[in-house]
Image 1 (cartoon, rainbow, N blue to C red):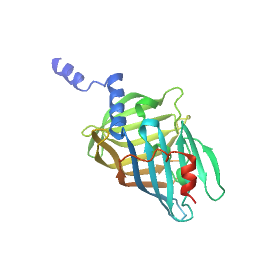
Image 2 (spheres, rainbow, N blue to C red):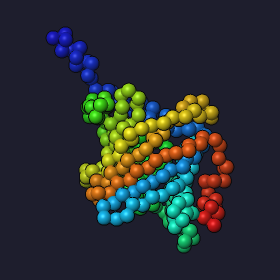
Image 3 (tube, one colour):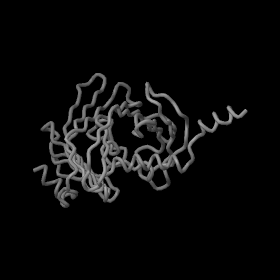
Image 4 (cartoon, rainbow, N blue to C red):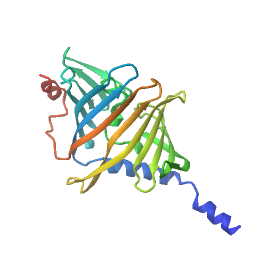
Length: 249
């Protein structure tokens, strides 16, 4: 009886507070108290169509929840950009010189990626977690959590599931679901990098690669490779419509 009791305690599910703390740790590790800039390569594959390959520069100011995704290649897309400002997402198309408001489900550049793949992590702010199970994901021991969107949070999908590496605390897999419960996409994070942030006084973690599988449009997938991360302070005028418009000229 004592052996069974000890075994049950050893495999007891984490408390609600412990699960929220896990999400907060993920958020904190990916956030920088200063600014963030990176060069990203985005490759989209779709059955029966030619692959699309983009190069973009991502600018973030986590303290103010600001984000810019500026396309620089190919030439046909250069100058197009997304701006997240005051919880609103805008797209600027230099070919017509217009801004359009976009939702959180906006496919970045028509790929399977969306804002959350480039922005800071806000899991603990946007979702309420619940425990599913301790599992194995390949050779990794993981904690499987289910996430439900909090009232008032603006996210691409209302529920998700996470598989968190027990050894490192990094997310290895995520699945996003529609209101109906339909699986919309599966995302894998096969490798993570970290670098020292002088403003934060700690390491900032970021996925080296993100692999997104579109579960609705079968045969469609997107790979995002993050390179040349820079955590130095950015010009305060960057996160404006005027700045993005000027870069497209």
